[in-house]
Length: 378
Image (cartoon, rainbow, N blue to C red; front, side):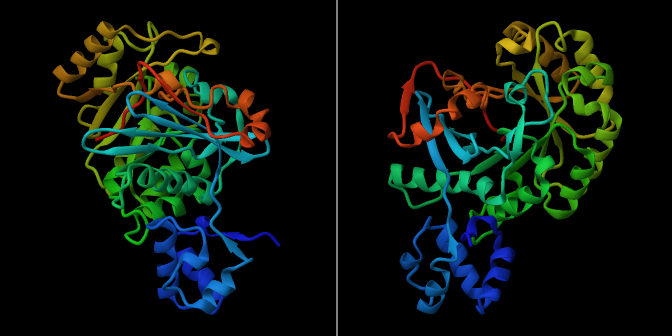
């Protein structure tokens, strides 16, 4: 039998597993702290665990880290990791340092089935859901690699955004235990306000998340009407805008923030006109407290789309701001290493064909100039 990956468990799951081994809850708490707070992978390192428990764990359990295919470092400090998840599949995570916080952008699926027109990850297609352990391992790797690299013992990652590859709410059962591990004081101790799930609008799962693990919510809106959103975000045909906004309004009853973030990718001549801005205002005014995050589009050949000019983005933002809408224009970080919003895994399939060969080689760390890419919510 294969060993049980302890990264697959939140604290309650690990407690249940330890009870199966005849151990009490406090042993699960000790084990959980060793894994997530100290980054231990060797049970013999866990000095305050009973020797009998360490012996039980040997051979039947493991802390399974992800194999690294490559690491790329931008001169702005952004780091992108490409992780092998087997079967020719790979996922990417992006670390984004700022003066007042450090954010990790995490993937939830290998590929994505939603197929948004402006997202290169979606054009790759969908391979499979990640396990809870594979989601959590991205944070585990970033946190403990950076602590070691920076010579620090205190927590590095302050914010997590589920904005990497995949639609998180289409992998709900694996997502929620991972979120609970991020939030747990015995794990990473992150605030609910600083963990954000981004969704293209899976309405039933928004309702479930509100009940099970309400964290900050970001919605990929990208259009002010159903006709245009149907073209840009195919999921809109199943869950149209009115239904989506109603679920967002309900979510605020349990959300850690008193607003919903609406992400809006700026596409030249498609959704960036004054008329579109005024439609957005009419859509949300007096209906839902929200913040607009305008995202510069990162072009890729298959999309047939162009990035809105900076003056057009600023003019669009001004219309929203003048109407009293909280609006930010996302700074781009790391697009010199293809780590910008919508760029993740645009070439993963090509690279993973050679993943076995690459995994036998040293990690590639490539500093590059002129970094731009995504930034995180405040």
